[in-house]
Image (cartoon, rainbow, N blue to C red):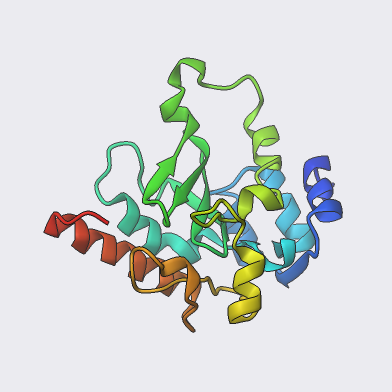
Length: 210
């Protein structure tokens, strides 16, 4: 039985309620070895794909999000959907990713941006910490994972009260660019992501601002 890194154990102890979404199959675990650091695979092997903070952040198999990253990256020079792997996402459409070259980074669909320290602080790259150590701390705390409204107030609890708890593979999303975070549709998370990305693509082509 693989030992769980202390950072993952901390997430289990402190980032509750924690729920196992499902166990990973042997085939999935074999595939995950090609995509994620060993410390992450060890956690998934022992505990499965889990959700944290009452469903605010959920882990996933990167293959489930491959079509999403393909649309996000397109023909980008720095990112490629086969080399960048989504290992988790928030209830508001922020994708947490891993790359052997870039390490951990985030795709923030609500803001239409990618935060990648390897590219924005290249003078301090690579970091002194090992890839395994960085990967062990990728589960966000509740404050980081939540999304703020225009008044700076966290939205997750309010969305759950207004629209009900988000189920596995669901996110809070809407059709409009301004209010898409506060209207829940009965779609899978992947469908919501694809709708959002395609909408932004059409907006970009039209030349109209968000």
